[in-house]
Length: 342
Image (cartoon, rainbow, N blue to C red; front, side, top):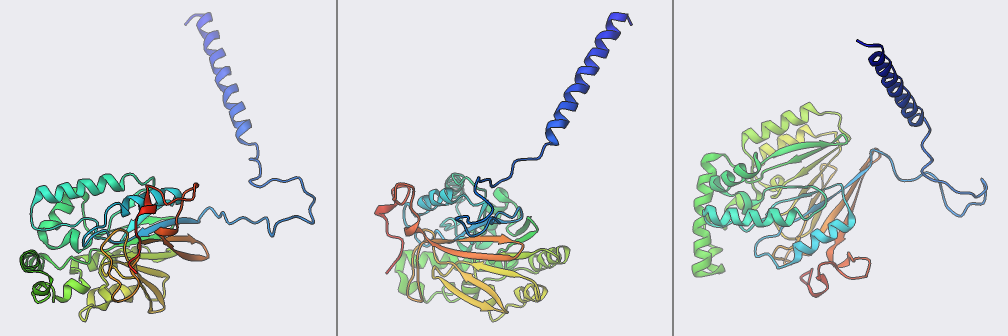
């Protein structure tokens, strides 16, 4: 190696070292305070200088059903409104597509359309399956090809989210219910609602309350055992499984959650209902574009804004008709729509 080459290498080494030293010097400088002012220490025109900006705090949105005869444009307005609010993520409680008879082309097209609409949200959207999405093994097969398992969990900032499949009755029972549902749909289309109300499917307990397989129960029991020290647990599902006369599998999850902080969200009824069960909030959302039913209570288009921090949670119920853009209008031309059945 020549002397010139050795000198050049030493110069490069010195330059690199100097660069790293300067970078380290600047990185060690203290960041400027978040809040700055030039007023004296007393007589300040504000209540406190401790801001509600804990690094562990986060907010997310829960939205509800689109189906049972989706009302045009409501969900598209909801996505624009959620983009105005800027949650960290969005979760729903199922019935995202209409579904129907086994027809892979129809189902794939419906899921393609919903995916395209949901992808317009700035935040990630986590799917929960409802009866329109998951009744029967055929519907489960479509879901699994597109999205994987129909029940799952995730952690975010030491907060646990359980996303349940309330139409997971086991393979054999799934087939039986699918056949009853297909027959019910045929009678509804050919003979009307009065005849449909007398069908086996219309009077099926699982249609109202849902259920879960033993495999799903065991999966969530294992998850809860694996994460015993989370600060809060949220359960997302479509049907209110706890209302079923045969709710032993869901009851096993409630038993495992005893003494812990948790909240349950569901949809399905298209009617808002709040109840306290086992000392915890169980909230049945109404609609976010689905057909409305106010025969048993309030039915409105809305979503929930949930904030989590180390002190607990807060839940705000946001009516879509009241979320306006900076110009004072409901976004996406929503001022022409009706958001609540009176």
